[in-house]
Image (tube, rainbow, N blue to C red):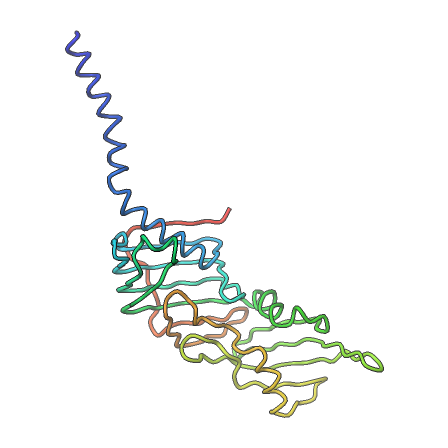
Length: 253
């Protein structure tokens, strides 16, 4: 009986110790993936995010393959409804530096991206950012169309008397240097009358670029813009794709 009691005690103790050992052993590596996710969360301020890596980052900061599916992130003051990024051969600074110096991508073999911006977010965020500090603007709105974009707003001028001027912009978008989105092939009308080109250029230059991704954590190379009824999609030449790997999830409460 005593021998059986000793055996049971040993088995019970082992049952407690083994799970603890199994969790503790990979902690040094797995914490790097969690730390990587945390840095991306700080970078993008997403509503939710899924990150897939083929293996945990090495002590030198190298990740062979990474995929991110991000919903509701903020880039340059513009809400991106959906952002998907795939990168291969990512060499970052060592994880031991991340807390003090932040993430720094030194080299990357390839990166692909997909971004969707909703018409509502252009109305709420983009124009509010560009014109919101000026109380003279009112009734600002953007209308996405398959052939481009239509934006309008009223500008209140107060001199001897008050004038509420209707200003309209008809435009398409273009990609500049693979990392910026600019208004292109645009025309400007004031109170339904076309405005001379040099005046239009001066007005539009003040809000260029509409979207700036030069400070994005990965060096993107955007290729194409697609117009929808209520959204704008910007993509690289090749679309990012998820893969089987280690999955990290984040959701804003």
